[in-house]
Length: 448
Ligand code: MG
Image (tube, rainbow, N blue to C red; front, top):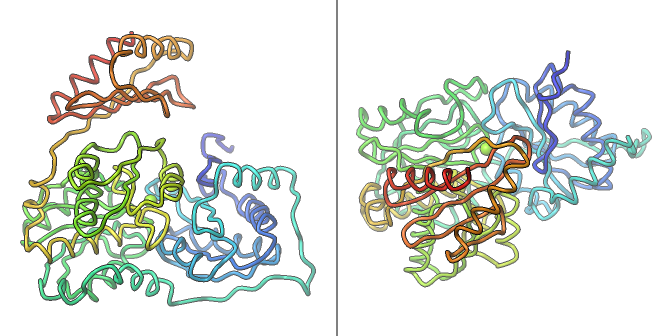
């Protein structure tokens, strides 16, 4: 029996459980819809290391070739690799087969448009309409598309990233780097890049078979082995990626996770020390990046939460750098999506240039702690509660672009009602965890 909970069709694509909702037929039809939407043309195809990848890939190939597309198959690579190659090949679009940090039984299709950006809401809706009407281009034998393997995709991507650092300078530092690639796409790509940078590697979970040795989201509670590895091998730094290697978590040389918010903050600090430019982050991202930007005279633009919204803001404002607090660094010079390789390269460059340890760099940044919590309320009560908050805080600095965000002098709180559950998500930030937690509790009481 299929569980409808096991199929998610969202702005980021279609995601399901293999053997349940994510069937070859559904993959084929969605891909036919996408190929029809593209009206043929070149499509870059990549996948993460999940064991279900080959099955999904072959259904995708059938759909795309039938719709007349010319597929360039990269096979195993990171999500940002596909984004970058769509632009390099001036392709009509791209597909990445990955369920990111979801458990192994999940897989998904993420669709990319000709700008190397994930489809917008309107674009994905057009694809969904074609899928629902089964309104597909089905080519005859002489109009079918083609499939070509391309084995330089990873190299192209890494070379593009390394064009923004001084390779010799990093080599001279002879960094010892600890790695946890969670048996994902990073297992293949990250050693390739670090070798070019002359780093010595101490790595765990480097078998590219997609059997995740721990919960694959790169948050501190899942990275205890990496922290131990950094300490036992006396590494200069530790890096952890999620299975499709778009998100990056960093461990300092003392074995402490710096927190995903600080991945972006360190990169923003480095880039703005070199170049002027705008910074685009979402409303729930740490104020650390904002304070750094202000100190360095850069403008900061806040967007709605979600990678697509941040990217949209970055394009609109011609940003130098942007991203999200979940370890998502977006550097438009390389591509328009979160890219862990950009993060790794720029952080190593920062350390090589300043000869500072990572803990010293982090200690020089503004200090904040984020607390994330939620309040369960009936759908009707949520509306009332949010109105009440607006009334109580009418004299505070309040932003209603995406839920309610209230900025105080040294802290802020952001409230967003869930679309799917009767809850309000609450994110609070302050100089200490205790203050952030107290702020969230105060807001909860005000809502009730
Ligand atoms: Mg991911």
